[in-house]
Image (cartoon, rainbow, N blue to C red; front, side, top):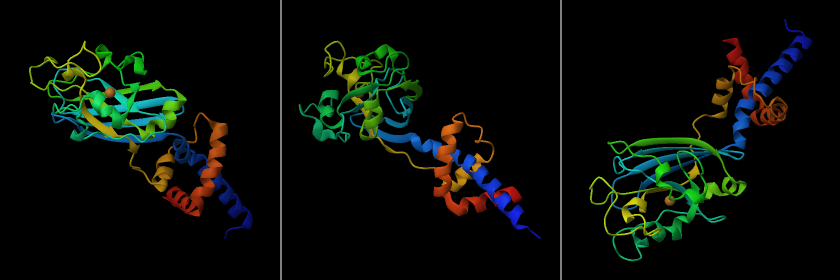
Length: 256
Ligand SMILES: [Cu+2]
């Protein structure tokens, strides 16, 4: 037999727990997860997968690259223009008809450099050509890049419109960036070093966990968050949004 009092108390305990646990569901909503699947824009068979997460002024970028020119450095940037939906060029962007979409020829669609995805130090457009601070592909043409850094509010607000471009194609497979053709950006570098290898437009990343899954996963102790005050506010909102189903799910879990 259940007294009214114990039933109410049980509900309140359950609600508090759900409110706390739903922090684990609600808090990431302030972050933004984007993904860009980059394919080759020129000769070469490179592919890149870029994951970009924004949380306040912190940006985390992970790039997995395959099929790039081996053992060579690959400049990589987030390209775009404020307030403009960027896209990746096709061969029709080859204005001078040399069969290659240069960085400048592609800029009409993907814009200018907004973030330099360097391995260390500055990440501003000033480092766009800092080729001593970009990833070098392994001998099999792969690399993995991951870095977290601070970005301007303008970048955080616009990055979902932008693209990830990885540069560098060893066209003649000589093992180095060379040849008479000069970069569209600077005469100091060969065209091979700066021409786009892959380009991908950033879109919202696929959600991998349902809210219910998030609650279950969170039962292990996300209540011990650091933003307790804010978390409670967010948690209350989360509780309303999650509704009774989550409480049932939580109760069932507790009874297992
Ligand atoms: Cu670039």
